[in-house]
Every structure is written in structure tokens, then in C-alpha cells.
Image (cartoon, rainbow, N blue to C red; front, side, top):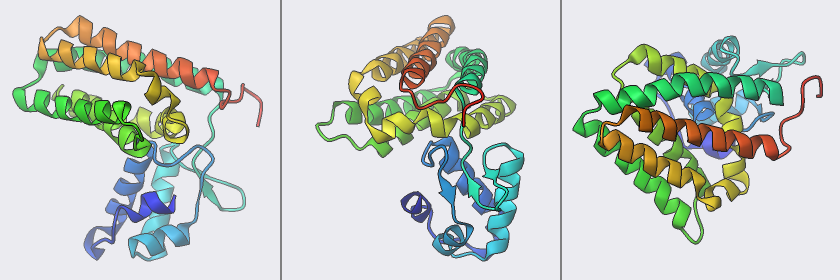
Length: 234
């Protein structure tokens, strides 16, 4: 957690509350904080050069978003997720993000396509690297997806997807960060290539199919990893 927080840098006083919230939110969406990881509010405040008040405010907002959890002893952690919750979020993501991919293929501009292709190139480079930087791959994966969603020109849709990734991001990227096995297998890279090609060709149904295949493949990998307890288990 310290390394991820330290990358944010120190902040200007005028926008502390909003920026602490935005930066912690971005780390969760990007999967840079792991399920069950505990956050020391004092350490976060020290790393960001703030007082405790804006950190507490940000944590309260993120807890209201179900993105952080305040425990009975007042410590704060990234929520754990069971297999049933993950399956539910996966079904919702398939519907909403699949629609977004189809809209992106229909509405994208040349600048959108360039941004999508650039993030795909970063991810592909890490997938083929002898010693891949897993955190860079995780960020490129997130950036690629959100460049696609931004191409829809539908801010409300992007906000809904961000809300989903707030909850699923830590789980979604845990295995890629820890072992890199999913990156090494190359399935995500192939799904991304099909997604980029479909968006370039303005083929909405193909873009949806590629995006859905990417979500489903990642979900199968994570469900088979044994990291998610079944309902009712701690």
C-alpha cells in the first residue's frame, strides 16, 4: 500500500478532500490495493502530506460507495469479496461494459482510437516482456478499458462502470499483480487485440463480443484460483 500511495505525491491544500478521495478511488479502480488490505489513515495522511481530516472524509465517502470497509475497531480495509458477489458483479459488468464497447465502436473518434491502441500496445509489451512489470500491465489494462468506455461519449455510463470497478478492481487484478499467470497465458492480450480491431472497424457486435470474452475469461481464472470464499465463509 505504501508504494501505491507514495506514487500520488503531495497535494495542494485547496483541494485536499476531493483529491484524497479521487486518488484513493483511482487506486481501487486500478486494482492497486488488494482485497483485505488494511489502510493506516495516519500513514496515508503522511504519504500525501495532509492532515487526518481530509483522509477521514475520503474514507467515509468510499465506505458509503462500498469501496472501503470500516471495521468495528475503526480500522479500515479493502472489502473482501465472496464468490457469489463476484459472480453477480461479473454478470452486471458483462451487460453494461459489453454495451459500452458496442457504443464505443459506433461513436469513437480518431483520438479515441489512438488512445485505445496506445494502451493496448503497453499491455502487449508487458505480456511479451521477459520480466514483465505486472503493475504496469494492470494499469495498462485498466487504461485500455476506460479509454474504450470514454469513447462512448456517455459520462453517466462511465460513472456507472467506475462504480463497478471500485468494487471489483482489487479482485480483478490481484492475480495479475501477484503471479502474472493470467498475463503470461496471453488470453487477455488476444481479447484486447480483437476489441481494438473491432473498434477500429466500427464493428459494434464484434467489439461487444471481444469485451465480454475478456471479462468472462478473467472471471473464470479468478474463480478457479481459490482466492474467493463461497458465501457464508469468512
